[in-house]
Image (cartoon, rainbow, N blue to C red; front, side, top):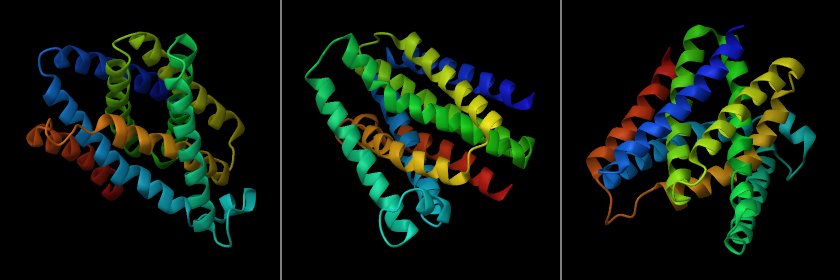
Length: 234
């Protein structure tokens, strides 16, 4: 019962944070963008890279797909493949500025949302406190991502995108809780999707140096870093 409730609360939290950031950015766009950039930078360095490093030691990924002689080579190959596929998708979308392009743009984001739902199940096995800390960290990260998507799309379909993300989280949690795929499957999928996350963070979510507000950016980075440190130590 804990997992469905956690998935619903996480999805609702993402929607609420994205809406709050959207309202704040109407008058303080540079501050909100810098805050969001700090969160994204902290997420990439302290969560995504750590997950990829752990996956690089997992023999399960290597057993499913062999991208080199060692597991670390397999993860690196999958990361390259996912990053190039994401870039190619972005190039395709740029040539098709319509509803189809906007819908396709959400695919990597929703795939990552489903993986967050799967990770939610794994965190629930560790106990209530790890689950709560993970949910808070992902609410912060995904809320920032949802806000960024809304800004780049001119506010178009912002609510629909947030709802789709919430549904993806719930579907991922249900899939993992029901079928319990191996750790190798999770790490393989993460390595593929991580490329989209990296491109999005460094291309879209970090402000330009001339526009950055270092105070809010440091606050955003520190907020996510604090949640990660609590997850690591508690």
